[in-house]
Image (cartoon, rainbow, N blue to C red; front, side, top):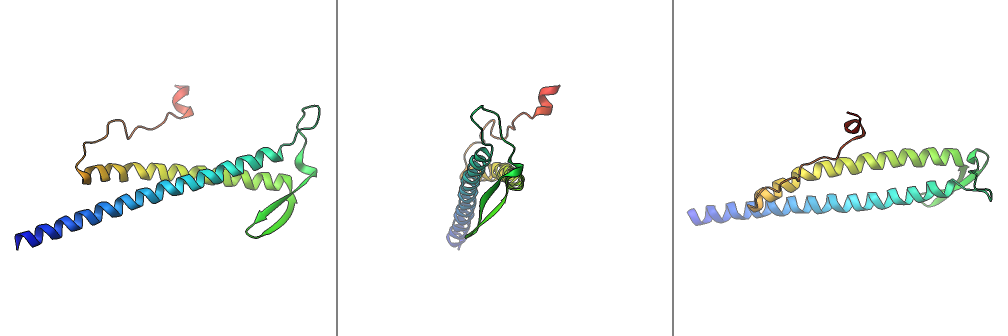
Length: 134
């Protein structure tokens, strides 16, 4: 009986370990996909800021740009497109930050389940602008 219970506990532990590893891989893949989208938005924002021959930046308020929503293209004022892209950038930054923050405890838990020693310095956070002002 003890062997059956031990085997059951071992299988349960491996299942938990595999599930956690799968979550970590999915989160990492989602971060990569969101980062690709963020880079595409950055390229689009840069393209909207056109320069004329003298190097001065043109005002996009009078121009219109084509935007793709799903499978249709719509022509909108460039200022509206820029505002939408900037808002999307903020949303993407927040989502990526949230995923990265949630990833740290999952990786720590995975190391714990694998019986590996705690990774030193893994829970460090980057300095913010407020930290530099002190």
